[in-house]
Length: 208
Image 1 (cartoon, helix red, strand yellow):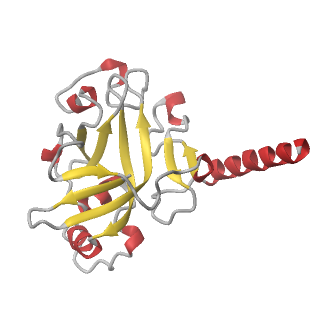
Image 2 (cartoon, rainbow, N blue to C red):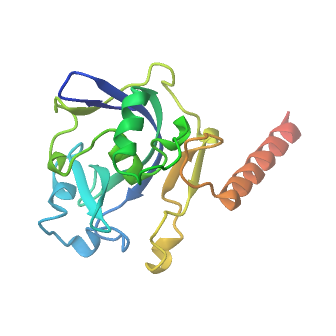
């Protein structure tokens, strides 16, 4: 899918989703809705699938999620591949960075949850909006990648949930293997994936 952000001047910024994390709701101890807890902040997680959930981290950065099927479940958008509006994205990122910081490469514009919010000017006020009908931010199909095969997607543990016991190790982060815009690679998960693929290929060769 492609995330589109339409600015007030009509400019449309686009980025292909290349990395996400799943949060499963009540049973998921790493989720904001763990135990079915509802708060003023996480209300969007309990709204209909496709509702935008924007929340601050460290008091200054934002993360964008989309509510999904399941009570209190949501998907965090972790990284995008910039497709259009890169110069505007670079300016928006620069406004949040220290003076004199190096110019960002294209792959660095949206390679993290707070970075993509900065690059696409995702605002706190977008929380609880309907991603399917909103006029300023939406998801649309990707004509260049209509399908993604299972062999292209790496499943790995989520980032920053190390204190949540068994839920810290569950493979609920998904990213496109080999994509330069992924925020953090997990070599162990990629090796396991390759080993599984090699084993399947070997078994297929034996049966032919």
